[in-house]
Amino acid sequence: MIVGKAFGVRILVDKFFLLLLLFYGSLGLLPQVITVFVLVFIHELAHVLVAWHYGYRVKEIELLPFGGVARIEDLDLASLDPEVEINIALAGPLQNLLLAGVGFALRYFLVWQEGPASFFIHCNLVLAVFNLLPVLPLDGGRIYRAYLMHRMGFKEATEKVLGYGRGMAILLALVGILGLYFSWANISLTFLSLFIYRVVKEERMTASYVFMRFLTRKKRELRDKGLLAVEALMARENTTLGEVVRRFIPGRYHLVFVPKGDWQLEVLTEAEIINTLLEQGFAITLGELVKQRP
Image 1 (cartoon, rainbow, N blue to C red):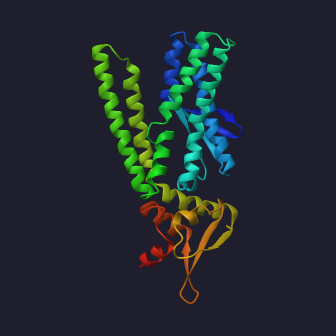
Image 2 (image 1 turned 45 degrees about the vertical axis):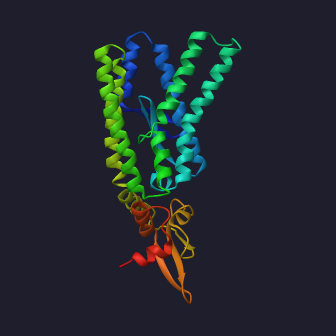
């Protein structure tokens, strides 16, 4: 559900997040609810600022029960660069840890009352820790996928992280049910397992269409502008796809020239490079890609 705009970015609220706000609001915890809402927004704003730093445009922020998702228009390229994805993903949890530190300082110097300060600190720590779980689309899942992409392709890394997410959702559901039965946990744990299972399912569908989205975006840019600037790069055969993709500029279509032998040139298109990177990973060289051509 769209609730407004900030800095030209649409703000959406997930239905689970809305239900959580309404539930705790009905218990007379409105100040705490507002605090959570603001902290989640700040968490996502940190992602937006780092994405802007790298030149990516953010089209919308969706607030989730324990964090959110900043959707980047050029997500295809941002997700395919491990360094960029890690830095964007870390921004949110680091922001929460920074705010928790501020809360500790204010409480220590008696500037802030114990009750509100403790809740503020607790919320920030929960947001930071939860978002670092290795589950997509949470920040920890994106960081772990970026780490795996140094050894395998985007698709395989995504499947591996999604598998952890499914397992974690099932484990939390079992623990939640046992906790309710033995009265040492509340319904929040079961709610959390349902939320994780749902977002894992949605992320699988999204990841399956990364290459298709990439091609669609290029076609849309060509249709809207009538022309698309071509960026030519020349690289040696031993250059990895990871090194090449980091030179790609959003809004342009790239052709990569690979000299062979007596300066004969092989021409690789951006689409070929992205598709191979998704399948085989960053470590594949241009020379290996040329050999794989039919």
